[in-house]
Image 1: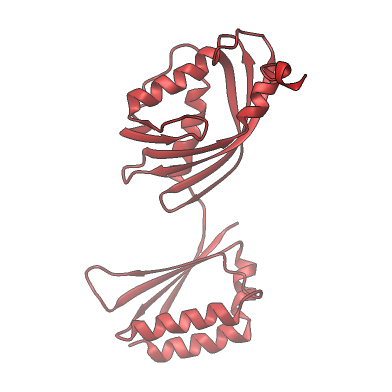
Image 2 (image 1 turned 120 degrees about the horizontal axis):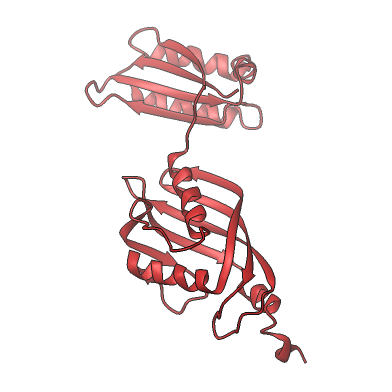
Length: 235
């Protein structure tokens, strides 16, 4: 179970404390068990700071606290505080990557059968799509829907999410696309063949949690080979 520790402190010497944390990161390289560290400043009290440190488990946090570098840095941190910092230990009982959930719903929506549902809840109006296979970027929700419709007209397909990472306003999704070629696609008559591709899409999310931009990487050449479009070129 993921474990989070909150360290609440007051200091008028944050710049020194910031340099101290840089030193701790450097000294514990290859030893520390913390996976994520973040410090927040209270907007209503400029001397109030909260450090949030994430660990894979409580046991890993305890192992981290037993490092001699951690003990030494902690004593130096206390000296920079106006008063003794307080600690709150939290077992994480719910952890949602909301931007990641939006990206997942996007891929699920693309693969739905029948008419493409409205995507107003998924895409911003001026959504910007980057696909290296297209001569120009696709800009705007209406243009994006037309692009998606072209693929949906040519294939019955679904995405399987293999991996996903979310950080800040970016979500990176590694996917597998499995499809049946049911309609004309880029001038290729329907073959009924089952085809597949793997690829990666990076999405940038807007402040309200919608997808604002997308960058696609996939092997369209391999798809064309599966459709038989390269057979004449191989002779």
